[in-house]
Image 1 (cartoon, one colour):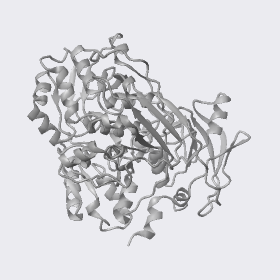
Image 2 (image 1 turned 45 degrees about the horizontal axis):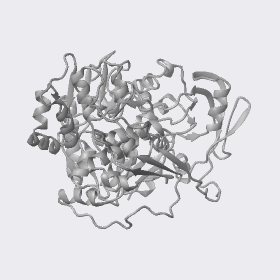
Image 3 (image 1 turned 30 degrees about the horizontal axis):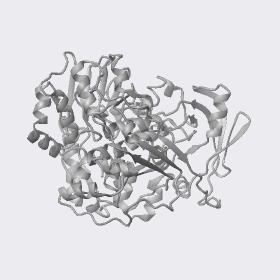
Image 4 (image 1 turned 135 degrees about the vertical axis):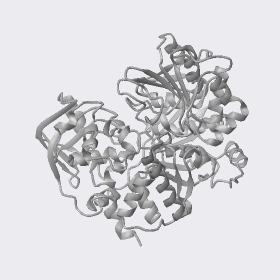
Length: 587
């Protein structure tokens, strides 16, 4: 699946010299991101995308149909047991239907069009066992907000396999929300089993669900860890501001009476019928507080029609909600209703990165639709009362996973890289901090704008100090967030020759490798620099040498271990990126 980025994917497709999409019946185009943009330029872009999709024989959904991930589910483009990829970071959503959904980026999508193939690093697996049943007023959103906060590192770069008797108690909408936000949890995929709930949901949409190859997870498969969650201990939560690491019960936050300016019932995480009806249940017969703006957008046109039939949509509008077109919008900082400087918002979306939904000095919290609606009425962060619960303490058991026998490094040799040591020793530097949202859907954003946006929310003006040949050393979970390829290409535009970090988001690493930028992990180096008091953000005049073949990185007179690059990564770097790698495969 591609969305508004289809035109940029086509640019890469054309650059490869391809003419026909290899398997168009397997390709979906859904216009959903910038649907509020009524400019002649965007209208012309949408027309070009539609013409290309129809000429190639792709499945096409015009603007206004809904968010691509919701359409992939509604139209059963995704089926249990399938592998489904999207040029968007929330492809994890498809795991709700028992599919392996995982994100790719623009260059990958062009390669899929041209060859029908893509590459993937096989991840370790973490099993998440759900026990018990959610209490009244508690939702799947609360489950995943808790997991993001309590286990921020345990599933990073891994695939999550949900299991346990508690799954049978979760309706499909809760499963979709949880799978969707395994992206924010740091996982490359989040897969639910296929059960009676799955089969009934598919049957209601006119589809058939053949029996899976196995009814339960394979007990003989190796897993890195098992996390056990008692659903009965989960309570309504709020995350933020500006991060998912701080998640607290809404009852505790309500006592602080944190005033809000805007509230949002939007996104592919919580824009379905049950979400709108939950919010309508809170708002029925009430009005949004004076001075608060509440925005609502259904996840799809079908969802909006269903909400209109149920009366939920009218209830929201009568309470003072502002309706937006079915699509992404404010969740990604596009269109009406963005947070202005100094404002505070609460949203039922999936990300609250600093500056993502508006001004960089605005504050944003995440919560379930019912809490968002309650806050909109109260004028401050508030939520429906819930029965007291014992503190949620998920159990985690880490397992030893046997490493494969070491093999000779595959592929051609990679010469050492040397440059000036540049430090950004901050954990969880997200893609919004590497490329601002307003540049993402410019197909040909100019170099100066891309460069100026690098690390601007963290260290304004820092990018101006960087120069060609620098090596960027960063903290843990570098590049978390969206699949925007510009997060990597902006660094390349500056002239960064390598990124070394304690750990690197799988999606960012894809983008870096696809564009010929080494993205390598060395937790030892980062720990030593921090211990020595370096950074956290600084340009030094020290040299650093990155030796991918020798598996070492050397600076300040010491050498540290590098984690080996897999064969596909070495092949991509040797080919100067995915374009060079794929050209030999295109008919």
